[in-house]
Image 1 (cartoon, rainbow, N blue to C red):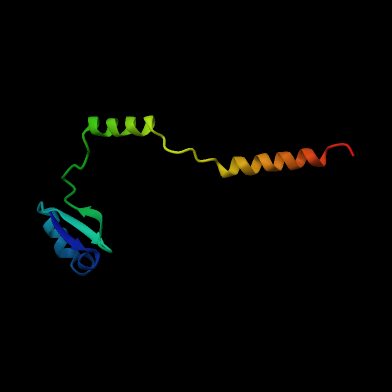
Image 2 (cartoon, rainbow, N blue to C red):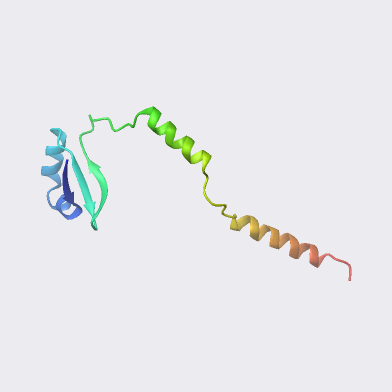
Length: 89
């Protein structure tokens, strides 16, 4: 696989597409980081099902840290304020 920058892709799109359709693969780099791949449509890019399933199971087992929902927090505050307004004086 040949790495090219996003600028090179903009300048020589036609030539790179022709080369990709002949089977050559390109990694596109933007700001020093890999961003995308350019390859022929005829090449399948599907990961094996076992690999994808194992990744999913890992994510389900470890959901990460608890992150409270800010919308629910706001609703609770509103309900509390509404109850205070309706208390007998």
